[in-house]
Image 1: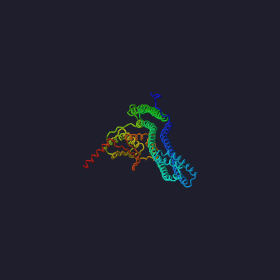
Image 2 (image 1 turned 90 degrees about the horizontal axis):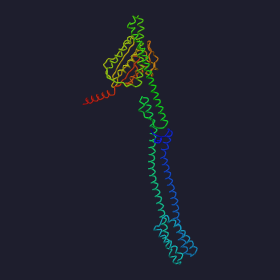
Image 3 (image 1 turned 90 degrees about the vertical axis):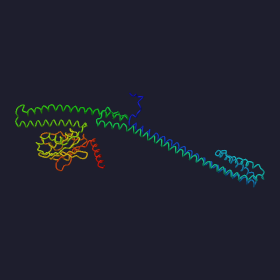
Image 4 (image 1 turned 60 degrees about the vertical axis):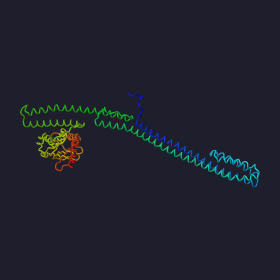
Length: 494
C-alpha cells in the first residue's frame, strides 16, 4: 500500500490543479519578460552613458580646437605688440589645453598622434622664454599644431563611431538571444499547457468511459479508478455507487420477474389443465353453452400465457441478447406463423394473401417469429372483421423487406411517434374480451434491432395499416456477395 511519504503529490481539487497550471504555464513567460526587461534596461543604460560620453568627448575635441586657435592668436599678437599680458593669456590657454588634452587622452590612449602633440606642446611652452626674434621665427609651428589638434578631433569622432557600432552589435546579439529564449520558453509553456490539459482531460475521459461502461453493462472489475482532482475522484465514487445500485435494482427486477413468471404460470397451468379435462368430458358431458364458456376460459388462459412470455421476452431483449443468424426460407417461417393463428383468422373472417416462396435469407428464426407473431396478432386484434391480411416480401440488393398489412381503422397520427414504446396503448382499443399489455410492438422492434434491422409503420394506399420489417444482409455474407460480384465483373471484362 502506498504510504503518505511515497505517494506522489497531486492537487487536491480541480481549482488547485487549474491554479497550478496557470502559475506553471505563466512562469516561463514571466522569466522571459524579466530577462527582456533586464536586457532592455542594460541597453538603455549603455546607450545613455555612451550618448553622454560622446557629447562630452565631442565638446572637449572642439574645446581643444578653440584653445589651439586662441594660443596661436595670443602668440602672434605678442609678436606684434610685445605686451606681457598677452604672454599671461598664452600661458593660461596652454594650461587649459593641457588639462583638456589629459582628459581626452583617457579616451584615445597612448597613440602616435598624442605623442607628437606632446612634443609640440613642450616646444610651445618654451616660446615665452625665447628672444623676440626667435619667438617670431617659431610661430611657424602653429599650423602643424592646429593640424595635429584636428587629427585628435577626427580620432575622437572615430572612437565615438566605433563605440556606437559596438552598441549596435551588442543590441543585435541581445535580439538574437531574446528570440532564442522566447522560442525556448514559449515552447516550454506550450508543453506545460499540453501536460496540464492532459491532466485535466484524462480523468474526465475516464469518467466518460465509466459512464459508457455503466450504460453498456460492462463488468465493473475491469474499470480502473479515476486518478485526478478530488472532485472528479469523488464523482467516480458516486458513479461506482450508482453502478452498484443499478446492479442491485437489476437483480431485484430479475428476481421479481422470475418469481412472477413462476407464480403466474403455476396456477395458470392448473387452470388450463382443468379446462382441458373438462373439455375432454372427464367430469361428464357438457352442454354447448358450457363448452362455449370453457373455450373462452381456455383462450383467456392462452392469451395470459402469451402476455407473460412477451413480458419475459421484453426483459431479455432490453439486455441486448445477441441473436445467431441462419439461412432459411422466409416463406416457410411466415406460413408457420399463419398456421399458429389459423383459428383466430378464421373466426375473424379475414382473407390472407401471402407471398410465394422460396425466399432464402440469413436471419434469427426465434426473433423473426416473434416479430411476425406480434404483427399478425395486432392485425387480428385491431383489423376489421371480414377484412384482409396481406404479407409481402421483397429482396433488395443488400436487404430484405417484409411487410404485414391489414384493413381496418388506420393508426392515429398522435399515436405514431410512440407506437413502439413499451406499455403504450393508443386510442384504438383491441376488439374482443381480452386486453393487450402494450409491449407487443416494443418486443417486435427490439427483435428487429437485435438483427441490425428496423421495424416501422409505412404508408399504404390500399390497406389501412402496414408495418415494414427491414433486415440487412449479414456482414460476412455481404462481403462474400461483393467478392462474387467483382469476380463476375472481372470474368465479363475478360
